Image (cartoon, rainbow, N blue to C red; front, side):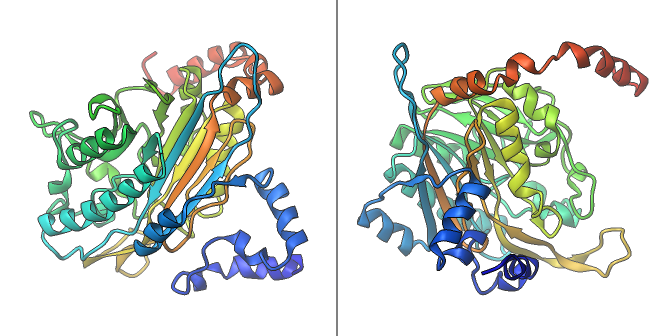
Length: 392
């Protein structure tokens, strides 16, 4: 296959959504040399695959889940023990009909999520994250408050947190729950994530700092910008942070999680083709390189349709859907090597076995932290912020 064939294939990739083109690398599988070159140039190296048991493979097949697992190489040290951690990422289509009652939709979505989290637990995942606001359709495009605001829930006692707390305790797993948060007193809403520890307890919360104002992403109609900064949470499986969806477009957002000590930054998203698919493989990977930590980019899958048409204010005809959520979740290491992506069209579970010591090793090797010269930028950033009316 020559470059023109490959370009043609990627240009017309959307026609394969219904037919099941999982990921670009599968185009080259029949050509061993081309496939090896592709992995080296596109991913950084060919990572060793995790040899999941036949029982786990059968379980994944029965759920129609794309199960992938990879091992990042480890460099042993004399003075520090190897810190192996199994990172997990879940993507799935929103099941059922958006015309059903909230209770019926919630039941179907929770059932799908529970099954894949169970699979993750059986695969030995230590720290897991699901896609952005996984517990509901991504209905913000409609601008309708009824019925979608009914999915908003309390951070500690909401249905999604309670379900995942049970599973976290069952599998001795840390779980990042991305959900639509409602304060039960003020009724203010945020796009948020809580970190549930291995005992099933909520140990902290992060909120979406940057809210899109583009196309059908009418999220500011529903919730406000985050007010918690860039928190990092100490867990038995490393220091973790959550950069929710649109925050991936803002390099300083990624930077602050790194400065605050993150070793794994999860990026739960809900983004569509063709708006963002060309940027998708780049942003979280660049952040991993620049900040020498692991990034976990997670997207939902499929097309979600709504009963009533809506418009975007762009002169285009009214429509019933936001677009195609292209999945393709992936993990990147602190030196820039990334896994292949999960399927564009199927539910999936991605597992990466990593040594967290590689974060410091990458900083030592690349010297990016020592050469970033924050002093060159802090004064100018403060001046620009003041000119724009921000309080310093």
